[in-house]
Image (cartoon, rainbow, N blue to C red; front, side, top):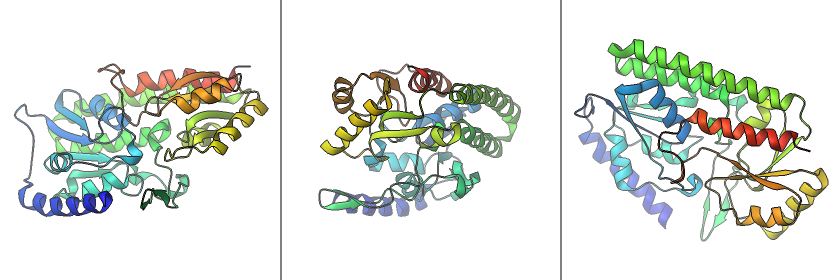
Length: 311
C-alpha cells in the first residue's frame, strides 16, 4: 500500500507542479537552485557551479537509497528548482518519477544519457519480496557514480547544462570543470596503478556496490548482500566466510550507510580486518560538511589498495 500511495502522490504532484512551475526559480541571492541525488553528483555540481549555485540532495544523510521514498515536500522542491540532475530514469527510478513532476522538461537532466547502454552492468531486475509487495530495482546496476571515467562524462554534462542555464558565468563553469577533470584523471590513474599487479583478484564488501570499479580496473567483487542491499541469509554469510578463508583475503570492506553487524560476524570468523569504503550514495552525520567527492574517493582508494594488495 505504501508503494501505491507514493505513486498516486507523485502523479497528483505532477498536475500541481504543471500549474505552478515558472520559467526561472533562482532564489533571492541570484544563484541557481539545483537539486540532485547521490553525493558525487552534488559535489561535482557544487565544484563546477562554485559561487553561482545552491545544491541540495533529495536524499537525507545516512539513508539506504534502495528503499528511499520521497515526501511531498521533496517532490515540490524539485519541481520548483532551476535544474534537477540525476543518473537516469532507468538507473534511478525514484528520481525518474520525481523528474516527471517538473513542468519544464529542460530543467531535468539525465547525467547518464551519454553512456552507451553496453557499458552498463546488469542489475537485480527480478522482483524481491518485501512484505506483501515486490520491488523492481531495474535492469542495470545503479552505482555508476563510483566510476571516475563515467564521472568525467557526467561532469561535462553538468558544465554544459550550467552554461546553457547561465551563459554569463560560462568562464567560471569552464575553469572549474577543467580543474575537476584533472583531479578525476589523477584518481583514475591511481586506481589503475593499484590494480595492475594486484595480489588478490576479489574484493569482499558489505554489498555489491563495486561493479563498475571492478569492471574498469580488472578485479572481482563479492558482496555480503546483493546490489540492492537485501538482508543476507545465514547461508549467504556462511558462503562469504568460506570464500574469504579460501581466498586468504586480509580485508573486508564495510560501507558508511550499511549496518556493520553482518560484517562484524564475518570478520570474527575469518582473519580479515574491516576497512572503510564510502559508497557515496549519501553522506552520514559523521562526514565533514565540506568534504568532496575527491576526498572520499582518495580514502576509498587506500582501502581498495589494502583489499587488493595486502598479504
